[in-house]
Image 1 (cartoon, helix red, strand yellow):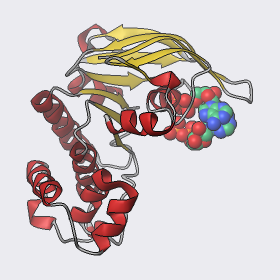
Image 2 (cartoon, protein in one colour; image 1 turned 180 degrees about the vertical axis):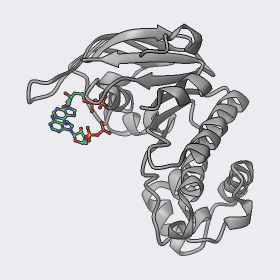
Image 3 (cartoon, protein in one colour; image 1 turned 120 degrees about the horizontal axis):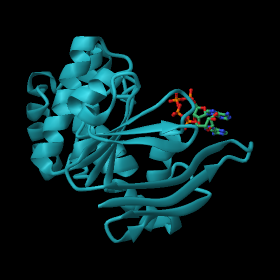
Length: 237
Ligand code: ADP
Ligand code: ADP
């Protein structure tokens, strides 16, 4: 489904963030990306959603070569990739429901949301997703009144509302306590299974990666140093 081949990224500063990355993510697979700070994890995720342009190599999502896309086609391809961030990136003064809707409606629809004219199918689907992530009781709460775990659930529902084929998840548990972290990882895992979604999760907590990922890829100095099942990862990494 997602294939990276020969991907290199060298920043203008001269930092070689990625060197010859070969990686293929099948449908429905949850992959944890681990490695020390500076290993290239964020750069890899950003190359896939094209916040960063790889210096060379190919990144394909199904039949689409992502590295050559521009303009409207790039925006279209990005919609197939749901992003979930460490700091949730919610709009504090908007309600839970409005935050979820803003993901699908984009800028114009976001303005429309202030006018309280939501497309009905989007509202129905947003409600269904909020029910699924356990927030049906909190639709009207302002985002800044939520706990960290609840905020991340809103971020997950917002990403899913665009019906992505792939989730790109950057440190989803970095600001959460251990128990909430496990709940969020379990939820992500279940949702990926239910919807046959592939996911790349950039995560520094190796124990969580082992517990919830199908596959672990270890990066170091911009290169893949491990690629296998959690069971195959020796405990001393
Ligand atoms: P990780 O996410 O594993 O911490 P990063 O992808 O952030 O790693 O960084 C990989 C390398 O690329 C590091 O050496 C970092 O300093 C460098 N780097 C990351 N972003 C930039 C940037 N915007 N400009 C220059 N160098 C960068
Ligand atoms: P993370 O821990 O999530 O990888 P960082 O704190 O490493 O984030 O980086 C934060 C921001 O700084 C990112 O936008 C990254 O691209 C940028 N950055 C990281 N390293 C460098 C660098 N050596 N030069 C310029 N920008 C960098």
